[in-house]
Amino acid sequence: QVQLVESGGGLVQAGGSLRLSCAASGRTFSSKTMGWFRQAPGKEREFVAVISGSGFSTYYADYADSVKGRFTISRDNAKNTASLQMNSLNPEDTAVYYCAASTGFLTKSGHEYDYWGQGTQVTVSS
Image (cartoon, rainbow, N blue to C red; front, side, top):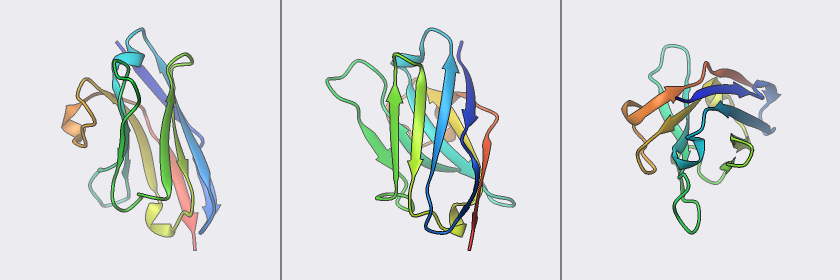
């Protein structure tokens, strides 16, 4: 069982940065793929970033094309946290951001995620 809580959202001007954090409870965090998704008003939830869990010599990550080069996902298994550093934000990044955990490997599909946080609002002003 994993419970996730996001934090770090807020209001930022275009071009600014925010760092989102996801705090996980439970004893299986390190083995799970961690992903970030977002959902803007009136739009479908979309994949943002994903990072692999333990069991490899290094972590693997992937990003949506819309955020590649601007966002960086990371994790700290010792602290049961996952983060999303967001730079060069633009108004199109405005959404509720969700942290999620999956048993899959670098899956980009929300259907493959078993646990979800409640979300944190990110608003980017022009």
